[in-house]
Image (tube, rainbow over all chains, first blue to last red; front, top):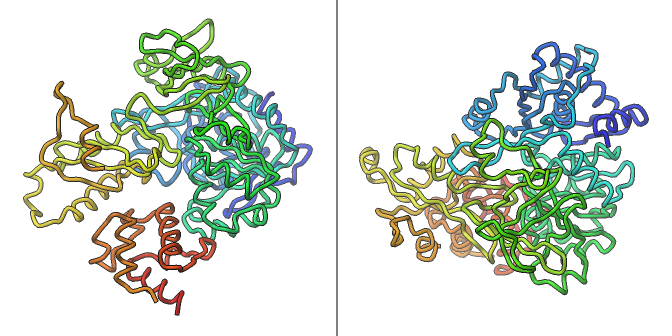
Length: 490
Length: 79
């Protein structure tokens, strides 16, 4: 499928149909196509044809979609960033990526009024289409480059598998900076559907959230399992509130069986799908419909079958394929695998490689294959998933250690029923820096550290609990004993 | 009528922050002590342990901004 042509086609045959609805307003296909052409025309005048990325900074405004398409129609990849990110993190990403232009909804609304003709040179299959930044273990966010060919591979697969009807309404829960949103955004746009975005304000206030859902008419629900779990607390969250829902698509974290079971009870005519995949392999690589048979058969839900053109390898520590049903590292080989990290050949070389002429990625995820289905078991390193967000614990640790009050820091996940519920920071304070405020309680110190961290890290990365220690327990090898910390305190 | 002490004890237990019992004007959302998921946990706990049913669909974050506000909101609910 030619994604951009397909979207333009909806602009011609259904120009008045809404492409996007949020509390910021609505945008029709006609407007989306005309405005993105106009923006692309202006970008082509402003920027040299060097494929430099453009930051698109906003939240759920309709102009975000105009900017995404406008950038690629001018052969520049976009970096979607949410305004909830601290300014320092945005600045760092901008520096790392060598960005010369940051577009915000206000700019975009002005630029599209210029009505420039669209340039003829658009993004080509092997060129970067978008770049999503994720947490990096050393505190430096890393940009995952996704080409048009990667995105097309993902979209073609989902469209063939799910057989969406024309004009469906897709729920958009995730911010655009999180690649889960690529699923709802592009599946909606290529099928002539409407993207229904929930804003952070609505999600933070259950009253507004349920009001919005009840009027949404959503047919395809796309979210993290955590979000659905939160919604299920309201008893009226059922087919009565959302009578049109036909399917739930989950991605971003492990789907607990009880969530799937509750959804099947409350939405008897809807399907529940589990998917799995890292950002480096374009949103999702495997999928499976979770029905009663699957629920009864497995206590831990499978993440499913890989898309047909993908090969999943399970490798042991020496890089050899494990025996059937043994666990090992999940390696993804296929056309949806990213070429690598933006301007980080060192990191790219560490985890990406070519395998039988195709791109391959070491996920760092542990899993096994049973009954021809992939099962995800967790991480081989210090990366955690919290409410679907991918977090390198080292990212938080390095920012904590960068604070003048802190001499040493370790961050660990707080687990509840094997699921990451929050983060805990273990901190050794720098006593010299404490002289000014020796009477502060640990609670006041926690709040102070949290506030300082919030200048650098998004709110989902801020530890909920802080423990103040004078030393860290060490292993016999002299490394910080993370296991002992967890066993003693968490 | 749920006592103030009982509500605060439950709040402290769920948030795992004992200061909520002492500083009744602590800004629970601004300080990150409460977030959407913790709020939902509290709603469930109030229903199970106090028999006070709060529909998440009626919930307003502003009404639960501080420990004092939560106590008042619950007492209003049963009075």
